[in-house]
Length: 299
Image (cartoon, rainbow, N blue to C red):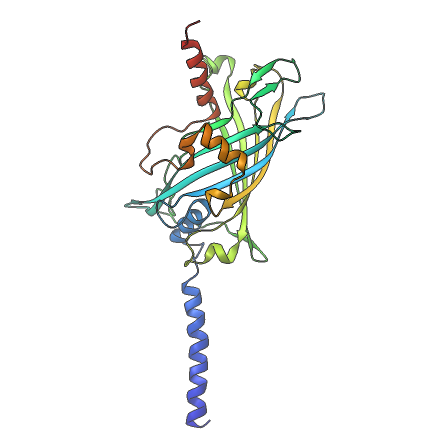
């Protein structure tokens, strides 16, 4: 091989391997603690602190009572606005905290309009619908890529032909805020399960040069009757099934949500501050505040 050909050959090899190394250097590694944190942040919020991300979902809610067909009670339209901020732990390294608030509206299953009054199909009674307005819905603990013992937590990335899949199950079992002091004797704990499934572009997710990912999401909830239904201990449960995605901007929300936020819940236009330390709100704690405010009113 003459000198000119040899030099050209070296240039080609250098370019190929140099380009490969550069490409690899720009890819987030799911097996590392840093990768675990970055992937979670890209899905949940953004790698940029204080960047407001918005999720939107829509679906349907059904009843299930033994001995009768399931009933389509209402449609669902929801949103969550959130932001993340980096936190540091001496042993666990750099992680992040997420803060958010969310709204979910109950819609008439036929007209799709906002359903402020619900007619109970079992009793015929009319009840005031209490839409979900939870503020805040924050991460209870920061997310780190290492356990409290310092062991790395790899991100369980399932890739199918360039699409990642990520599933989360959230079993819930806690003291019901509306119950009394004798729950261990007569029951009254809140028992539910929420299931989240995310999917999106693997290339987008692992690209370290891109701060945010835009996954699609599905949400399933299996739970007891909603407190505003006033169903007491009637046998049965509810299940919700919804799909959605992270939006590129707040403006992409449907008109019914933006109008409801503007007229009823203006604070939900933005996420809470990242130093928010308030306890999380749930449908039960929110309903308790409403009930308590009613009983405090003069008769």
